[in-house]
Every structure is written in structure tokens, then in C-alpha cells.
Amino acid sequence: MELIEGIMTRRSIRHFTGELISDEQLDTILRAGFQAPSAHNYQPWEFIVLRDKEKLKTIKDFHRHAKMIDSAGTAIVVCGDNKKQDNRGLLVADTSAAIQNMLLAAHGLGLGAVWCGIYDIKDYVLNLSSLLNLPEHILPVGIVVVGNKIKDRSIQDRYDKNKIHYDSW
Amino acid sequence: MELIEGIMTRRSIRHFTGELISDEQLDTILRAGFQAPSAHNYQPWEFIVLRDKEKLKTIKDFHRHAKMIDSAGTAIVVCGDNKKQDNRGLLVADTSAAIQNMLLAAHGLGLGAVWCGIYDIKDYVLNLSSLLNLPEHILPVGIVVVGNKIKDRSIQDRYDKNKIHYDSW
Image (cartoon, rainbow over all chains, first blue to last red; front, side):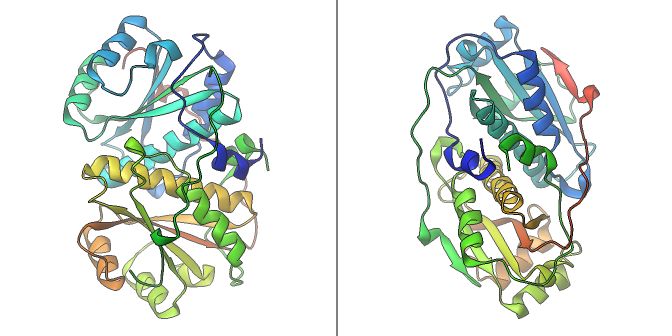
């Protein structure tokens, strides 16, 4: 798939066949995350690959928008290391760029993926930090849920010229 | 350029020929930004295209890492609308996904681009909000500086297996 075509056609996928993605596909998605830019090139991310059925079920129970997580079978929790980047805004920006790379890579592999937001929804941050035994300086920012999709979704054109301004608001 | 190859080879570019990007290239980059995912599909982004030389120079004066901005000639300030998304973490995440799409699109077009962080560096947020006359609910998150690059940069492999965890920290 061509790069710009991939950006334009990626959609959030929430319906999965149940067949796990391969280790090779997982590796490509993780490598895409690592290749994100970061402020000062600090690369303040950490990735937790979740396939444990009990833990996936626990997330499904506390996260209102992660009901698809066990049918996907693989979730990657993307975290930011507050010791490497102590500016919270930049930490969320860097890890979000990593997540977007991962969603696009999944699309490029023909897989389906969806981003479940975690930060800054206080309950989700606390529940996930506890479930994964995260140290205090490791902030869970979002979850990439990824699997084999049942079907493609049609393209949604979100362009809105009213949101483009020139030289001033 | 192939999607996954593009993700893996994109680098921050800070040296530009001085020739402006075309309107068609600008349009493609903006469209890529619009196609990002967002929490609840709120699409809470706004884009301010800056080519005014005085304004670019003002940014260069207050932002320590934007010295390349006038040689690039085009800057796109990506903002989040706090009225559309009142969770600050999700707002930064959504706009950062848009920025990453734009950086990748620039790479796919053979252009160079770099992300200059704004939020949450208090001075930068205040200076930029004042310069662009932003309403209080519009938060500047980052700047995409884009232009024609002088040369490519070699690939940097940032993969680090110590940052990958399985089922728990």
C-alpha cells in the first residue's frame, strides 16, 4: 500500500475474526511505534504487549470503549516514561505519534486496529497502572487493539475547509 | 513510497532549499492531518497555515528549536479545540496523531518536515496564542514546519527490545 493512500484510507476497526496476528506482524507494528519522532529524540515510550486472556477481560470490564479487545486478541499498551520526558504535554504527544505509526502499520499489513484512549481519564489510568504493575513514572497513554479484521470499512473524508486558517485565527 | 517503508524511513528534516511547497502539496498534507483518528471521532483540530514572513520570524525568535522555520517557508500550527474535546490528554493525543499523519505525508511527497513542540511549554503556548490571535478554547499543540529538503537523512533504527514488555511491566 502506498504511504499517502494508507493515511487517507485507514479507519478504526472494531470487528475481528478472532485469529491472532502473527509474531512477525506484531514485530513490524512495534518497530513502527519506535520510529516515531519525539521531542529532543528522547524516545520516552514503553510498550506492553497483552495477550493474557484474563487481563484483556479485565480491561474490557473497566474500559467502556474496549469491548472488542478479546476478539482482537492482542493489545499493545503504549506508555510514556515521565523520567525521560518530564513535560506531560510532550510525553503525550510523543507516545501518540508512536500510536499513530502503529495504527498505520497495522493498516499497511492488512490488519485492523483501533486506539482506545487512556490518558487522561483518571479511572482508566489507575486501573491499567494497577493491572500492569506500572511504576509511578510510567504513564499509560493509549491502547492499540489489533487483530485480523472481518471486513474493510469505507473511506471517510474528514476534510473541512472551515478548520483551515491562513496566517491568523 | 510504500506505507511501512515510509514510517520506517521518515526523519526530522531541518535544512531546506528555500523553495516553498506547492499549494497541491500543502493540500495533501492538510488532508492527511484531517484523516487522523480522534476520541469519539470528535475531530477537534484546527490548522493555521503560516507563510507570513514577519510571523515566521517572530516564532523563530521565541522558539529555541524553530530556527529553520523561515528557510522552510511554511509552518502549519496544529491546534486543539477545547470545546470539542474537554479532556486535555485526549486533545493532545488527537492533534498529535494529526501531526504524525502530516509528517508522514510530507515524507511521502518527497518533502522535509519537522515537528516543533508547543504544548505544554507555557511560554510557547502564550506567545503563539497571542501572535495568532487564538481564542481561549483553542490550544496550540505543535507546529509542522515543512519545505523542500536539501538532502535525505539516513535511517535511524530506534528499536529497543528492553522497552517491550509482555503481559505485565
